[in-house]
Image (tube, rainbow, N blue to C red; front, side, top):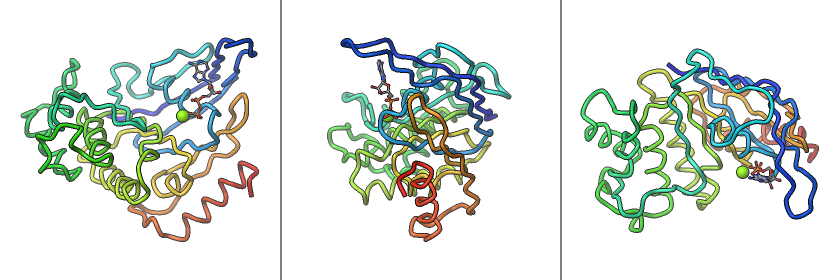
Length: 252
Ligand code: ADP
Ligand code: MG
C-alpha cells in the first residue's frame, strides 16, 4: 500500500557556519503528496530541495512541524535515488540490487534471485548482471540504482536529481525508463517525489509540480499536470508547462 505524504508546519534552520547567520531553510512549510502520485519539486539551487527530501526520508530531523505517511503511519518502505548511483564497488550489478533485501522486512515474497533478474530485465541490464560498477557506464550504473530502489517495492520513492549527472541522451532514456517503470507497476504505485532543476523533466514525469523558491523556502506555485501518461518528451505541451514554471519563479 502506498501512502500520502503529509507535511505540516515544517521548520528547519541550519546553525551558523563560519560567522554567517543561521540559515532558515523552512519556516512553516505545508505540502501534501497523494498516494501513488509522482510529484516534482523544482526550484533554484540552494532553495532547500535536497533538505526537504532528506527530511521526508528521515535522514535529517525537522526543528518544527510534522511529516506523516498517511495510510501507513509506520513501517513505510522508503527508497531513494541520488544524483550519484552510490553502488558498492566490489559487488556486481546483481549483488548491488540484492543488497536492497538485506534490511529486515524488505525480502521479496518469492525467489529473491528471480526478483533481481526481473528488475535487471526491466532496466535493460540483464546482460550485465555480473558486471562490477567500474565496468558499467554512468547511465548503466544509474539503472542499477533505479532497479535497487524498485527492488524493495517501495511505498515512498524519493529521487534527488537522478539524471542530472548524465549526458542529455542518456538522461532522456532514463527518464523514459522511469516513466515506464511507474506505468508498469504491478501493484500500487509508490508515492514519489522527484527533485529536479529540469522543468521539462518535471513536466514529462510529474502528476503535479511544486515550485519551491526563496529563503525560507515557500511554494511559489503548485501546478497539476493533467496530460495523460505515457507522455512524449517532445510534446509541445511540456514547453508550455516549462514556461509556466519559469513564470512562477519570476524568470519569464
Ligand atoms: P537544493 O537541494 O535546493 O540545492 P539544499 O537543500 O541542498 O538545496 O540546501 C539548502 C540550503 O541549506 C543551502 O544554502 C545549503 O548551503 C544549506 N545546507 C544544506 N545542508 C546543510 C547542512 N548540513 N548544514 C548547514 N547548511 C546546510
Ligand atoms: Mg540538492
